[in-house]
Image (tube, rainbow, N blue to C red; front, side):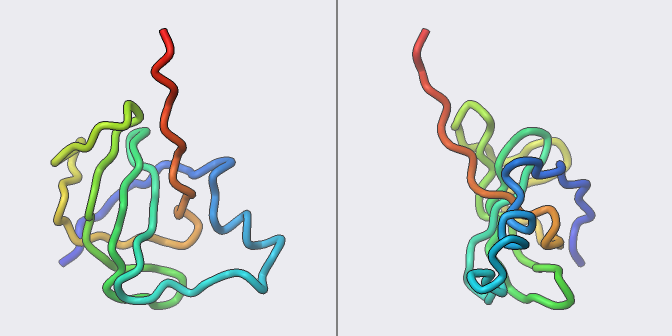
Length: 101
């Protein structure tokens, strides 16, 4: 059974909104693909196992904090959890933050 996740809104990084302007380049997620979403400010990488009706189902492959560091868990979500990721919650990978002080 999948874990219920309250994904963050992707905002400016929304994959769905980006491809709404350019439908010809929209790709339907396939098994094995890696998708990104936001959760508690972190980037979550999900490896797709199945896709149906605008929702990808897959396992959390990585949790990357806004500091760029990988984590085994964050809140109620852990690497290896089976999750559902709706297309409207998909996000582009956040760029790494500069380490300038």
